[in-house]
Image 1: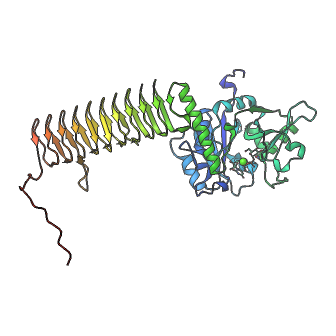
Image 2: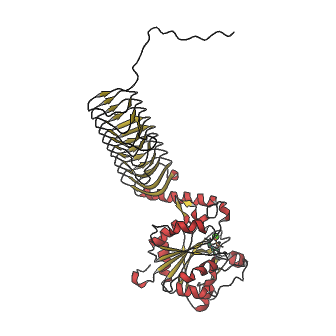
Image 3: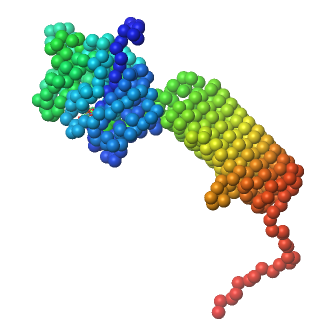
Length: 475
Ligand code: UD1
Ligand code: CA
């Protein structure tokens, strides 16, 4: 492709067709809101549009518009989005006609479908370059089984120039033998598109207004029609059913997995890797099978993640090890795990868990909205909520912070070098002074002095030679 200065190209306006019913999904959720890699299908398309630096996006809604519009119009979109309703749905040409009043004349319109999530920005850039601001550019692909697709009809004495797109249902046997199909994606100057849309009719096998008829108008008007043919079927794959959604999800995940492996990440099995957000990995990261990453996750150098972990919205520093079956979700507050920390197996880190270097969190330990300083340990069956835990604290098995009095949350402060025995209840607000010890089974309701041993439990009573009750004989 020849380099082009960006000033020489007209602005890009993206048009996303999303009015179709998606009957085969058999879902109450509109098809374009079904999720792939954790993101609604139509959002994938808008994300790609944003990568093109498009001036605007127009989403054509119809079926499920009440659900689709709030999502695409929500704040935080990287480009200006507006919605136009198409009711009833009389075909792809009719869909695009609805957008005419809101489309500027000076742009290039890129037509996309809300159910085709994996088109890459560089593919669309190449298509736009082919359009060049004065041609009709079609994205095409060869299929071994082109059944159902619009065929790219070339020739007609003029070499292999594109003459028309003929829909499968309207095609002759000879045309059905053509394997090059229209992907559903085109780039077209807005002023030409508008003129051609005004000429569409529905005199065809399906009685619909076909967008694809613009090709024959371009040919009639002497506007060049160019085809940009790609070979990567994933980029033009549409989703119509749960099976197709799962197939595309897997193909997409496998692609992501390969990209990480190329960067040096060691995935035990790329077929058992799921990324539903953003993952940054430093050097020498190892990830065992069946892990799911969501939101924003960052893994430092040499981090190891064991099998079957779910990790979301979390920063894990170098050398930390996340043992199998650990669940981490920082949600909005985030979770941070310090260098060389050991987490799990079966640990749960919730929003606001901030763990320092060399912290150990063992099995069935839950940490929420708590900081744990370097070297603190909670190895078994424990709860730390709204707590500030000092360096080297050892927090015994079965101990909990009672942080909630039924109305309000209170903080527990455990100062450095404290040893909390097993099965303690620390009733917040309470502070355990530095270097102190809390005897096993204590319920601590008052703050303790540094260095003190605190025991708060029933005194042990032993009755010598105790005779156990015996069972009464049956009458
Ligand atoms: C269309 C193309 C066909 C191409 C195929 C690629 C036409 C006439 N045909 O066919 O050449 O090979 O895509 O997948 O364009 N939609 C609306 N409103 C409508 C009809 C459709 O918004 O009235 C939306 C659908 O929701 C979908 C997209 O447009 O996102 C494409 O519609 P679809 O019915 O799948 O088009 P095909 O007939 O498959
Ligand atoms: Ca289709």
